[in-house]
Length: 233
Ligand code: ADP
Ligand code: ADP
View: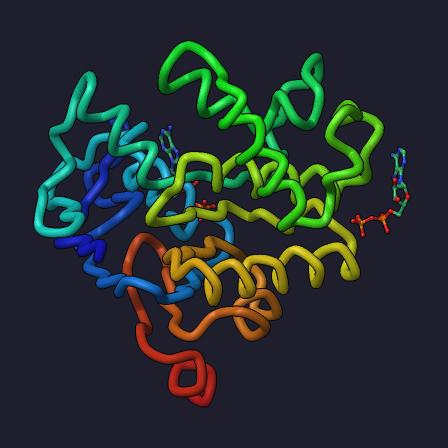
């Protein structure tokens, strides 16, 4: 489980009163699909960057399965990042590589090479997201929804415990958004991977999340099951 404890982030040069995150505490249980929702400026990107350790918190810590990860560096940091896979709004695929090579990328990053077994696994993952027949295509030949499905397959290649989705459907039309959300929910059910959905969209949270955290001006203002939180006027 991920325990975010009293996390505070103040950017250098920002006014002391303007913390991007201010004493944020969030508990994310294994196997959950949790939404973190807030308007622009609420601190969502800062929280994502703190969770994947692109930013270091000013105060507080992030404890994953009992281990404080906020100080990790080098090899330990790389191994932590494989446990927490990322999916972005912009998909982040390599344009010059085929779909299959994109999904194999984490294998290459981890060991410097891609084995026949790795390739088999990548094809399995592409099958899971319904794109096995696109293995030799390039990202530009795919629709946005399809590119995001490739990004999901790539994320799963690390065998992550957590998938952090940063506005993962914000660039997609409603039909593709639904396809992606349904896919994430199926993956959560079949693999038990914990999914953290960062979004500005209430619709996304209502469709997929069991629990939700509402951020506003860097603070947690609501936290609980989707039914509880959204029943509050
Ligand atoms: P969101 O993703 O919810 O829109 P952000 O995390 O991007 O929120 O921003 C939270 C606050 O932190 C905002 O007030 C924003 O202006 C500020 N902020 C974000 N990034 C930086 C930065 N690199 N330097 C200074 N202030 C920043
Ligand atoms: P998804 O719902 O997964 O986003 P779409 O319904 O948008 O997929 O795409 C339907 C079909 O149109 C797909 O088989 C895809 O190959 C094709 N297609 C969509 N966008 C593009 C594109 N930019 N270039 C090539 N083919 C595309």
